[in-house]
Each structure stands twice: as C-alpha cells, then as structure tokens.
Length: 186
Ligand SMILES: O=P(O)(O)OC[C@H]1O[C@H](OP(=O)(O)OP(=O)(O)O)[C@H](O)[C@@H]1O
Ligand code: HPA
Image 1 (cartoon, rainbow, N blue to C red):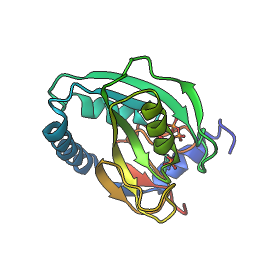
Image 2 (cartoon, rainbow, N blue to C red; image 1 turned 60 degrees about the horizontal axis):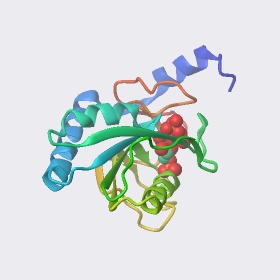
Image 3 (cartoon, rainbow, N blue to C red; image 1 turned 90 degrees about the vertical axis):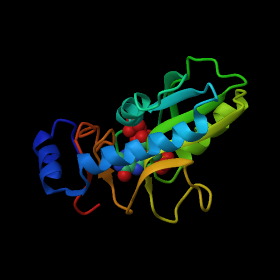
C-alpha cells in the first residue's frame, strides 16, 4: 500500500470492527495497574516502554503506578509498519542502567511474542535481576514463539485478527484510535 493512500487509511478505520471501547480499555488498564502495584511496589524497578507501540499503554499505565520507579523506553521493531513480522530490528537501546534491578517491559501487544522474547533475553543478558512483561493485549492463537507463551500481566485478550488503536498501527496509522479495532478481512 503506498504510504500516501490516505483514502485507504480512512476506509480501513470506517470499515473496522470495534473490539473494545475506550471505557472498557481504561477499566482493564486500571485492573492491570492494580495487579502490578500489588506485586511490584517495593521492588524499585525500571519500567521500559517499547516504542512505538508501547507509547500509549506506557503513558496510560505509568501514572497509575504510584510507587518509586524509573521509566524509560527502548525502540525495537519487527513489523516495520507492515502487517506481518520479520527479524527484530533495534533502533534505540535502553538508556537507563538496570544492572541488578528488576525490569518491567511494557508493550501494546504480545502477538507471536518474538519481540518480547528477544527483549527479555537482552535484558537478562545485560544483568537485570528479573524481567517481567505487561501488555495491553495478548492475542490468542497457537503460533507463539514458544508454546504457551504468556505475558506476566495483560489488560485484555483479543481474538486472532489484525488490530489497531491505543498504540497499535495499521501501516503506521491509527495508533491514535481511541479504541481497539480489528481490520475488516484481516
Ligand atoms: O509478538 P510479536 O509478533 O513479536 O509482535 C508484537 C510487536 O509488534 C509490534 O511492534 P512493531 O514491530 O510493529 O513495531 P511498532 O511498535 O513500531 O509498531 C508491537 O508493538 C509489538 O512490539
Ligand atoms: O495485530 C497487530 N496489530 C498491530 N500491531 C501488531 N504487531 C503485532 N501484531 C499486531
């Protein structure tokens, strides 16, 4: 799809199926934040959002975690604004030293999970004392990077369709959509 085909981008939004409304998503993020707080409030963790998809959930989650933490980001991409995954490409490594500290990785979606598995391995190799994951959505299918792979925290579970909104993109667009939508036909 040419990047400038804005009519197609608009059509995808108007044809899409709304899977979760903004109110449903916000309630689920509150629940996940309470779960994380219950087990992480005394850990002095470093919390990394994974760009770009983790931009929205990272921001939404952080202000609900009312305990001492340091927040940063890393940028890795596997889909590169397309709808199918490739090798993970590192664009920006983490800037906060987390040697000997617990790390929580925050991302929009665990789909096949290759992205999170590689980031977990990276953080462990760099000396994190433990690494856990929190995602806005866990996509349900049997193509996970390792059988039965699950995030440690997930706000929502979604059916096996290509979704966008709340940080997730369709060809680089609609990360700003205020709901979680499934592309018609995908
Ligand atoms: O579980 P996986 O199959 O590995 O897919 C999940 C990853 O894919 C997306 O990132 P993407 O590579 O599209 O980059 P983006 O964050 O810039 O959208 C998403 O933000 C996750 O990081
Ligand atoms: O369904 C998806 N939507 C957006 N980004 C993604 N990255 C992996 N899966 C998806």
